[in-house]
Amino acid sequence: MVKRSTGNQMNPVIQEEISGCGIAACAALAGITYAQAKETANALGIYAEDTALWSDTEYVRKLLRALGITAASTETPFDSWESLPDKALLAIKWRIEQGRPFWHWVVFVRNEADTLVLDSKKALKTNTRRDFGRIKPKWFIRVD
Image (tube, rainbow, N blue to C red; front, side):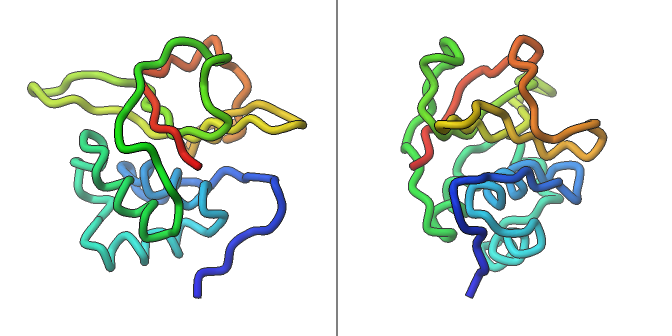
């Protein structure tokens, strides 16, 4: 059984591989560790070493389902921070490389106390971000 955190507080999970942002984002949403999410992902045939994690949404959707989290079946173009749902996976740093789209996954969370972005990138000074003007989402997936 996967141990989940309790309460409304969500915490950032740091990615342990260069392309592990999708696994880390799912871990943050589930309230589990990166190692726990990676174990579940690997059992599903999802590996951080696979760069498709950066360019295909089905991998994170499959992992979220396995972790008991419901996500919207489609991506919604980003319009404004105010129009985001209370919980979402955001695609940021979106770009095309060798004809293929790539992005970095982060988690957007809004609750009574705060609005923030949980960013799994290891090199950041803080992984709880509120510098919304610097974050440029392309689209999002609503998470329930």
